[in-house]
Length: 290
Image (cartoon, rainbow, N blue to C red; front, side):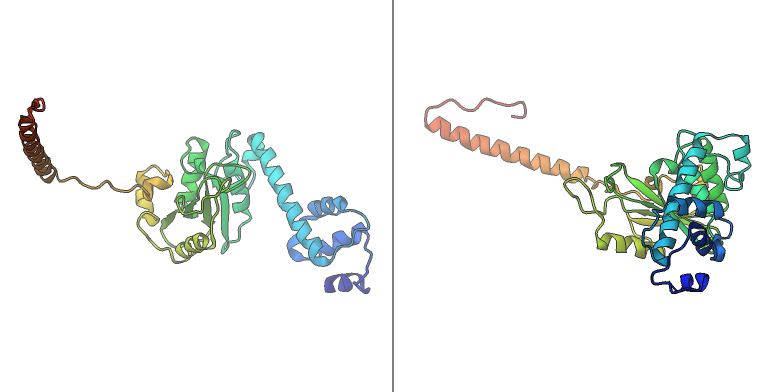
């Protein structure tokens, strides 16, 4: 509440502020100087007379801004046009298709990422391999060295969808010339309605990402040359397969075992027919192998 005291010159404990004062309070932070329209809209949405401390006001604005931006990007993706193609967020990569706005959200967030920042976004697996405009966007992001890590998650983790999703980690200044793939799709705790990632599963993902570890059937660092050979397709199973190799069969040993079993059958049958003869009963019918 110290900022309120400095901003109004009054005791902040029970300070009443007009909407204009509240707008000025939020905008007094340098990083919000260019966001007056969004701040004004947020303040107007607040309930008059409701008690809020400085932290609640700032956190509320951040949530409001995120939701506002998400709605804007979704609306934008549904109405692509020439003017939008010149938007600084998209003009270097092209517009995402109307049918799938996933890359519109990604490019919007990536535009605001700081040079030394790290961005992680949850998306459906389709962004990893779909063609057309999405392929062009994905290819440029890869060629420019911005896609750092691809993490595949299990299905049925979220209430809103049962499909498996992935996490794309992006950087503007990525150092290694490779992409880390983590296939965590089979590492989860199964629930009745919802699957869950335990603390151990999450820790394994984080440690693998942090140290860029490679582990058979779980993670692998893939050079850009190999990704280019696959036409910049990032389908995780291309690079980290969880399939178990089938055990090789020794045909000679198998043949010898079958011959031994066949010999045992003939011996047992002959012995049994001997017993039947002593009892005055007919023998077992002959088989093709007799």
